[in-house]
Length: 471
RNA sequence: GGCCCCAUGGUCUAGUGGUUAGGACAUCGCCCUUUCAAGGCGGUAACACGGGUUCGAACCCCGUUGGGGCUACCA
Image (cartoon, rainbow, N blue to C red; front, side, top):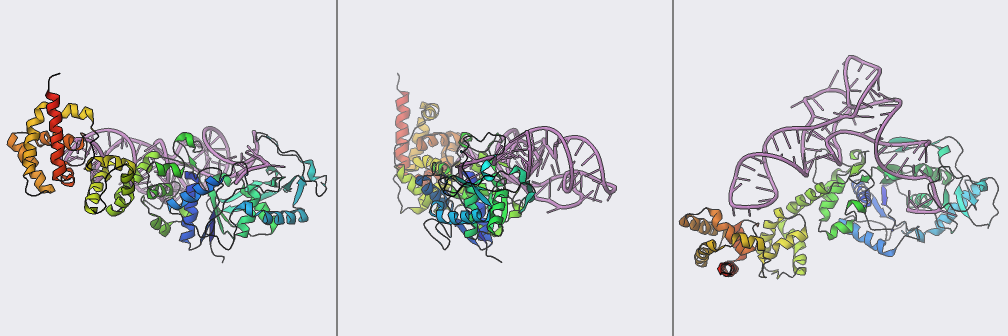
């Protein structure tokens, strides 16, 4: 039994998108589950569109998601190199073998420009031998009839009539291999045992099976996973919204949330919804993978994000948030971990993303409040001046500055004034946070500290009297 | 057009011949409540259609319809 080896083979023609990320995730998870090896290979044979920046972006996105590879770029391995453009010799050797055995032939027909042609290619080169050295492309000689049948771990037996498979190109005229050829040569050379990839490759597989056979290699197990579609049931693309991992990262999503959501797109394990990478590895299998394409749902992704925000330990959340707060210009006191964890926890249930949490954390720091003028105009009216004034007096002499004492002070004042608690709390909320919506007032006041609370109340009082001035 | 794949609520799905068809997101309502969230509870909502097979079909077979993919010297 060969040891399990799986691979993710992206082409660096763009950023890593959610579809590719999910394919990578499934390959990674299965490799880990089976105790096998996860290989990362860069398929850069499209010289026109491949770019180094994309290679870097893909590696970066993979690492951010937590999908580490055992062999591949930057880590090396016994089956390298892991860039196809550095493996040209191996394709040439394989090509010569196919040419020698008659499984392939040279073709000097002009390359087709469009893909709309309805008729299969009719290449006369296949009958008239092209002299060696004449250049041109190398085509595979597909059997005229019969079927190519192979077993797919997700779809079962799949069969294609050879008559519908054209004599596809193996090597382009410039000597660079095409996808269907390079992938086979590499997967065989890298001893890949399970080829897990998108459904869009199912129709390419018979061609690859033909090449495997012509080369005398054993077939790997194939598993074609369903594609990810947009709400309009068309292939998911930029016009549907954010699709690159990089974009989600910039938008403040947690890698855990993205991975979790992607895992549940096309795969299920009973009724479980929340999975960490380690939890997924423990139970991942191809049997849980469905066959039908899945529509990407941004709402459910948001839910996964919220769930993970709550799932992460407070100190971990602080660790990830502090850099963002510092970048936002907030005076973060790293020594006061208790306070940071406390304020972060009040914000978590009210934030969809990390940047949003940071934005909301602003009032907790000793920086000018971002006043919601509409809130000020509506709540900080002349009538509340005596209320806030009285509140200031009580808080100034409050013996203990904690949640319970503060609650007692607020409620006691309301009662003494014959008001409902909200009549004291709401003005205080606007005074202390600048807005009408915030975490619980007693927690806010406790976290703010007496000094800041009194100063903010003074500032609010100033605003109230200012508003009371005629004109 | 040809070939291939697919088909459970709006969305992601569980289900593998006998279930009141389960869960999650979204949605609606109620509760909680100092605001906003979060949370708790409850509701609406699905087996695409038509034939078979079977004592019995969401599950098996055929067809129809619908959707997706491939059909490049892209991957």
